[in-house]
Image (tube, rainbow, N blue to C red; front, top):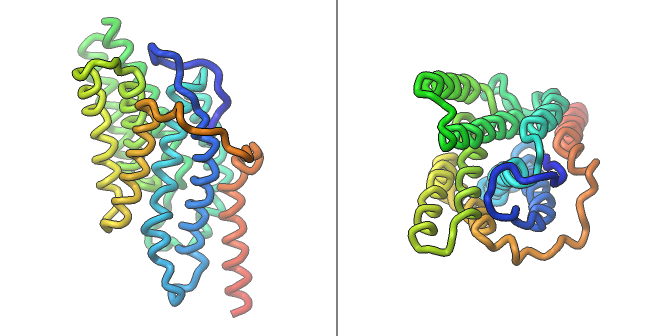
Length: 268
């Protein structure tokens, strides 16, 4: 769900190093898989619910962070990037719907959340530029903002992680841009830190248990520290993830779980 670096979208400073995303890809896939195995495959009698509420809560904020990072710093066309994520979501939707989630009804998988979130974040970044350039009048601003809120309110009813999940990427992008672009002055640093607080608040609201909140917020905090300058400290990953594995794992692992559940039901 990442795209090769092309050109920075907005930041005034040189774009930050993206070395950390090599580690992020492995961690995101591993924690996501642990989450889904604990939720759908492992019997409840094994007592592994803690894995879903701890390690499993790392995956989504990490996926959202990598999409926001690449959408902001590394891709020439964020909307094309969003469409590519959407294609993965369309491929994954059928096996995703085969998971035991009857209580959720029809729900669109996380790729739809990420794609829509990146689209919203891209619009927000462009809106900021137009406001600073004085090219956006009040009526047009009100109309665009009203339409964006309406789309967010409607889409949040159908996607995984709901309304709060849709806010993660736009808020990440705002926080990352401000943290990366802040100068050395205390006032600038404090202002940038203030712009990072909303994404941490949303991350805390996304889960109910204290353990889940802690893992989600801690993941977001690490990402924000990377945007603030810690990205320079990340070493290269020893084994880069193959592109086909990265693109195919999400739909593929759902298909494998669905097959296992079907076989297990048939053997029971």
